[in-house]
Image 1 (tube, rainbow, N blue to C red):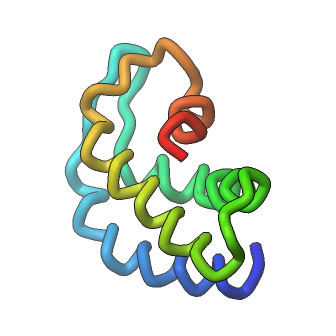
Image 2: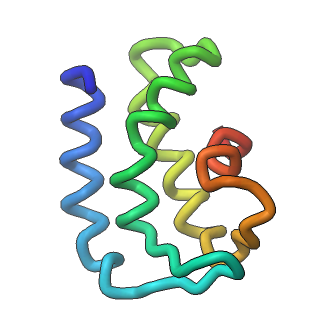
Amino acid sequence: MTDPARSLHEALMVRAMPLAESRVESTTSELDFETVYQHHFDFVWRSLRRLGVQEGTIDDAAQDVFVIAHQRLSTFRGDSSVKTWLFGIA
């Protein structure tokens, strides 16, 4: 992970900690925001860069993706992988 991504990652994890206690059920397995965030942050950050998001705004775009993912996590049905779902949000 690059330094700017690590800084955003650490800042968001501090804010996400209380969310770890609330688990959200999906049709395929139990998902919680912290797990989704920890496992897929690097993928989302790299995807945004590959999609052409400017270097100075990737952190903001990644935060936007995870804000939307947090809001919609309860609607994730498991029709696709979590990575595919996050890429669609990105």
